[in-house]
Figure 1: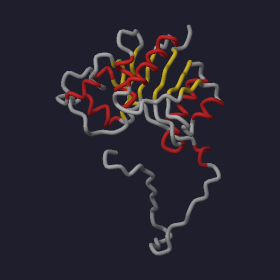
Figure 2: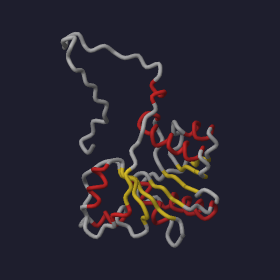
Figure 3: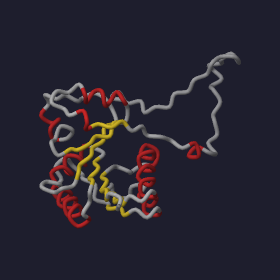
Figure 4: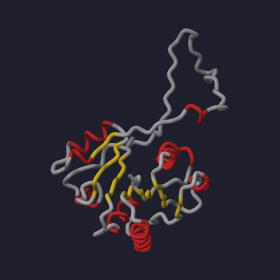
Length: 201
């Protein structure tokens, strides 16, 4: 049985924030899935994807209603006969869903944070609540639970998939010592938090 053909639209402009997701796409490609990616021009991950053998199109939507982008996405869906259209951000979703109108492709979205999600908000039905959306990748259980709190939402749509990091990505990174102005006892329990300090996260 042939593995699904997947068209991915996402922002791979910078290495660090997009690395876990980008490496997941490379992993799927290595496992035999036929992956094509639409991303921003000159994205940092584009040469890495191409080196791995993944076709990359530098045609990421520039606005929430990018008619030229919608036309390009639709042409790729038809020509490539894709089974899955995976949309990872708002611009991708708001252009990818209309582009797939009347096509048999299954549409999957991504949600990486909680908040700003309400069943009574009309814009909810332009993305996550859209009847064409078959699945939603939730980065954490809390995100999935927020979806499940929405009225008229099919719980079967969501799937929790945690993004992972490989220890070898950090080989050669030299640890910095704690600032001398905040000395700690030698027997103190020391904790380090690595986070994207955005309010919504």
